[in-house]
Amino acid sequence: MAQAQLPVGTPLTTPEPEHPQAWKWYDYFTFNVDHKVIGIQYLVTAFFFYLVGGLMAVAMRAELATADSDVLNPNLYNAFLTNHGTIMIFLWIVPAAIGGFGNYLVPLMVGARDMAFPKLNALAFWLNPPAGALLIGSFFFGGAQSGWTSYPPLSLITANTAQSMWILSIVLVGTSSIMGALNFVVTILKMKIPSMRWDQLPLFCWAIMATSLLALVSTPVLAAGLILLLFDINFGTSFFKPDAGGNVVIYQHLFWFYSHPAVYLMILPIFGVMSEIIPIHARKPIFGYKAIAYSSMAICAVGLFVWVHHMFTSGTPPWMRMFFTISTLIVAVPTGVKIFSWVATLWGGKIRYTSAMLFAVGLLSMFFLGGLSGVTLGTAPVDIHVHDTYYVVAHFHYVLFGGSVFGLYAGIYHWFPKMTGRMLNEFWGKVHFVLTFIGTNLTFLPMHQLGLQGMPRRVAMYDPQFESINKLCTIGAFVLAFSVVPFLINIIWSWSKGPKAGDNPWGGLSLEWTTASPPMIENWPVLPVLTTGPYDFGGPPEDDDDDSDFDDE
Image 1 (tube, rainbow, N blue to C red):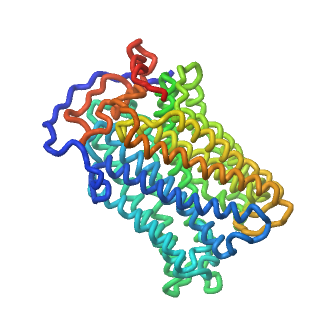
Image 2: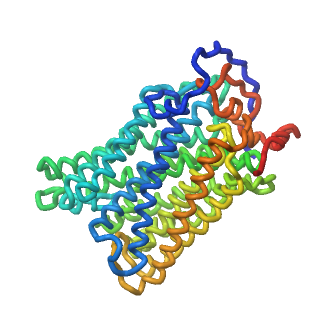
Image 3: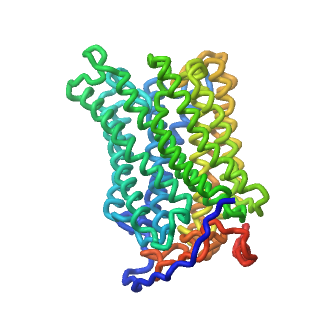
């Protein structure tokens, strides 16, 4: 079983900081440069947009409960469809997973006092609120209606002002993503404590490193495509106008070169979250440390060569279909390595069925199902058959909701005590998990059948033969929406009245658990020393003594 062997490092001493040791509540509304404040700013802002995007999804499912258009008119349905997808990807999952957990945890995990460029870090966050305002404000101009892909020529002929606001919004969050990625790479490379070797780096940091490199390569390509589209809409150019010599397929290449790797931008940090939660709550060393670490980098590299499987119906030549089918299937290998390693870690572990662990195990089951449908969609013959049907909707919701959102919830339950100094209520956490698990499967599992029967996606009205299955999906969506209620109440109540957490309620061994909960400004009075590996559970008997600090209720 691969496991890092950590030597005892040389104590690092630094002067006591002269700053106040805790921030006031109003500091979270300012241009604060502390990585922990910025991390929480990301998480809270992203969750607000999650609620906005979720309400749009509920409205769309209410519309789809019947075959006729009787809740939303078609234009408003298209605007909700476009902005729901955009908000969930660009303003919820990516900022929460990378900006939220990444900012809060990476400096703590590598033993640094802050990110490498604190002001750049704060600036990256403050680009997100205006981006969200642009998206929501676009509804006053009819709302962008061409879907989150915004393919021309549709995006060139519908609601131009709203479409331009949509583009500017994505360019803002893309700029924020590039700034953040650069900061993470430099922080991990240059600011980890000298005694920490690469094979001692927490797997969450490996995941953030891979995500950041992927973002630095792919995000500028999307920005370039969108800026050209903006010029076509507003300044009379014809990069993508087919009637003026432009080429719409080039836009698709530029869009998917970023937007398929965007799946990994959303899921790789969550893989890192899983690698931290499972060994702690299973009280067992992670199985295959190096395999998990290197598989993150492999996904980062191979993920750049699979984008064309989204374009099998765009006139792609056969040789290209074959190449991208193979490259897509290869991505499943490092992903499978991670899943195998997590299952092997769980095997024989002293599992604590906390809310964090339940969401982590729930993620495993649904990501496995989403991965299976992904393999079918990665092969050209099946993809062409079910292209633009609800089979695709079912697949990416199992991957992105069943994967990323479950992982975000797991991370919040796991690190909430560190961030706030208080425990979340476990009973209501489990109620939240059960409702979320039932709602997710009730909403998205029947969509596989809808897709195989040929129901197209992105439509407000459909053939009445699909109505009974759609009603089932709509009931599931309402259960899913209701599942947020106990979570919200739990967060608000526990943050102010919850029991004290202590510094290390789960008995974690990585460096963030060596400081106070919540951590002081600049994290430690004296920088920590490595005395054990981040996953050295099940060693000497005293390792498990921390269980006494764990209050299940």
